[in-house]
Image (cartoon, rainbow, N blue to C red; front, side, top):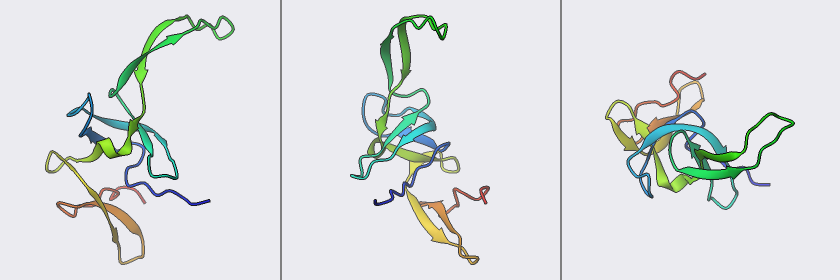
Length: 116
């Protein structure tokens, strides 16, 4: 099976560039990888939907209407660059020690500088 390599990872700050929540920002809290390239992201505070939930007395959960985040297509978001305060594209760079890291396309700054 083919492995999918995404340029956006869990915990990244992203900006929505298309859809009803265009212009909103949030952190990635979930990723659904798909082989056909239509991967989807769950972004904190973005794409809120109302979900009708039945009560579950065994777990002590009440029923009713809950508001929660729904998945967005990965093509509708861009990673947020805190240096320029704009959304940006992601590129890769190979360091001298052979590690492959993500970097912003516009400035060349490393995204994964703090991660080992």
